[in-house]
Length: 132
Image 1 (cartoon, one colour):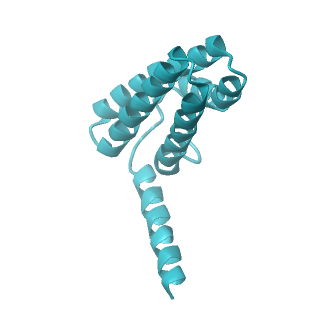
Image 2 (tube, one colour):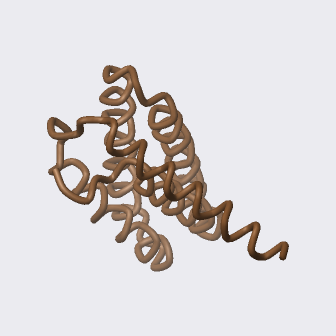
């Protein structure tokens, strides 16, 4: 019975998230930026694992700048405070990744990069449209 309640609660969250996405017009969002960020987030963990500080910094800096642009975009929309919050949290995680790389603490950088990747998925669950 408890398991059914959890599944139903999860389903309600997914359904309500889908409804949120339908309410926001994203046709003017910079798709190229998001594709670049998608490439960077996929590359970040492997280059951190390889202890390639230069490549990891490049990916993290692109992500940091992209999250700032995303924050500004949704702030101007005025109807997506949670998207602004997602972007700010991701900016903070990216700053942590950069700090860990600067300290040559690649284990901590990897942990922060994993959390960052999850943060991207959470926002996409709500805001990534299936079609534009």
